[in-house]
Image (cartoon, each protein chain N blue to C red):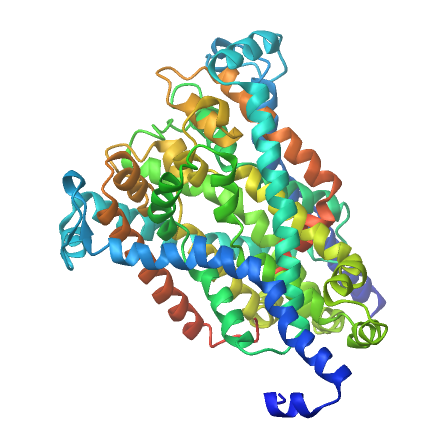
Length: 305
Length: 286
């Protein structure tokens, strides 16, 4: 980079161009920088400050770590935390694996109507979260829902899906899996096209490797960065789950399905306890950060931006 | 032995056939599971709730569409809600495309002080859960008197790192020589961006635009917090307000869901290539 002295000594045309060069990017970036300052960085900082404050009775006081300490003993928060982590630990691996399997099946050379299957499986990802949650509420209706009807046809007993704690959690995970598997599958499919060359498929065929062998010894290792990417984005998404808990189960029965984001919503906007809600949101930040670092380390890094 | 050879190749062929049958059964089953809820949503929109919640439910289209439509109109301002959703999603999309491509261009094609830090900060915000922003944004909007307005929904979501990242990645490939020669011809920096660079970014803009439109259309948590009156509701917020009712009128609710889903479904079917590459933008470099 030329120093100001150098620029000044250059001929006038060059100087003008240099100044244009340096000012233009700032001009181009200013709207984005302003929106980020106002609607991202300021709220992030303000939330942190709020999380050390209490605003009971309209009076704002500094309370140090009290909000955070209280969270540790808050049964509703602990329930929200364990629910969210349960969704994370059970649903994300199942979905990522399922997406990878579906992508490998769909990626076989002989498969026709490829485009149809891709669109069909991806379609749930386009639906609004509220609309699909409402449909799932209908599907999982205890007395008349189709899921229980199919179970009855198979001679199985119906489940009170949305009103018993464990079944309600499973319902939520089923709904999320329906909504997001196709989305991850599309990413995996693109990754496969890019990372696993045709020659490798052919080599496997000549060697007589079975589909399952090929999956574990070629697909999984070659796709590691994409699997890592899908796992991290799904983790971040799951930790922020709100719509499904709010619509499908309303957090119930008895907080059995409530997520961290849903509890944060109730705290901040139903009971108007801003400081406490801010503390909840910072716990979320810490968990997202810690898990992303952990997954990145476990994934052995990645050549992915 | 010729005999053994043919029988082994026959076995191989039979194995291949079995693999094909299994593959199609698997994919067909998945397609059914994926699409059936849509079918149920559409048929239920034309049924009476009594027909939906019954011991012998109808799984085909019925005749109650008009009544459901009338009920829906009593609970939500359907036309207005549609207008709100369309307006918010369109304005948001247009603004993000402009801002993100401006920023992406600057980050891709200029060397300037603070570029690395700025880009790192923007990317880092991808990891920040949006929930952290809600309380301060809510207080801010109230102080400004912007609660329950379109801008209150649109403005905060403009700070969108994904779009900036996507536009930057696409701008990187734009040939420097063209920009240089435009400069030598005396073209101003902004008009280089607007007249020369931007027009060549149509595929990326299409991808990001469709992706952003669909995301904003489904955006729920923030609009739920900041929109207070029925005439300002977007579709997800209006639908959620139906859910709180004592006995859910499923015919009506499914009609509402159908109305919220069909525009976006059509949009996806027409622009699916763009949407999918929008999804991919963040993950797989083209």
